[in-house]
Image (cartoon, one colour):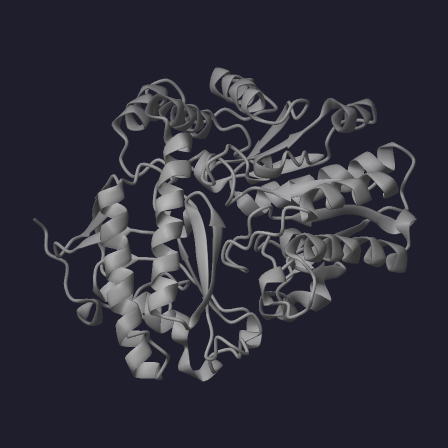
Length: 455
């Protein structure tokens, strides 16, 4: 086997997106595992950034891509239609809520969410509502890194540098109801957070508000935050009342990861527009999609078409990968497995929270789970940002051969979060191994930062 030099011994990288921390060179990946060129094995406990839903190096997907590579790897959508895109759109529409049957393919999550916003705006103009342009979002939230997607991302740390270059959108608080110290039930709290949307709509002026965008199950900004059940139907009701489009960002929570095809399906909450990516291509090819009903698409077509597009939209190779990924989900029963293994993973994480009471909350759906760490579980006082608790935990797990995911909201306002989201092929035994490593890492972290441990 080709041996790679130690990270510190390698010459400086020409890839400027790399931080000063060098990582080992990847050699191969299979299932939930990844190997480096120096022979180390890692468990991909986060599916990368929640991408590799069906696991790595699935032979059926690779064979389907190879067959397409032998035919055509690229065909521009303005010059040709292609069968993989047509078939993927058909199969995808069949898995989505009824009526969300018009699909527009893109290359990734940021493109998908920005496409949703642009579709909504063009629909408003085409239907005589040009005053509608504001897209209300939640704080914190994450919807992408392009300027358009970043404008609807509730994260000051990411947006402040670029604020003069874009139109930042109004925000409402993300429904972190578990933090609230009041006499309300969780159902009442869910309604109260939803009502904040109505208050914001009235403050902004209903005729200026175009859409509300949310992650049905939170992503990186909130570590799999789930609102109380009462939140979702109330949001739908409010959007209907004011003629506002509801956009679900399912880039991370979609494609089966939560135990249903869409995260919003857990509450039968039907959006007007959906963004998908990540697990849709499962890391085999850059792929994302917008899904909308014909009632939104038809006015655009009648007024000259969707004024939007990307070079790789509907790329035949990417769409073949997506088709094969959907096929493997069905063949292997992966959505059902995500539901069952997700219950086991959640129970194990809650067990860790009992052992390490500085884990103040465990949440999520299916195999999209997260946990939040605090310095004081009674007052929910956050760990001092200077201690970099999240990064230290990620490093401790990495040293032990496990990859998990985490990031800190600016200033530690929402604490230190980490996420566990292994591929949907994960087994009970593999979840046991993941939990064991996280437990060892938390033990070391608690000792280093003087955090409370039971018994």
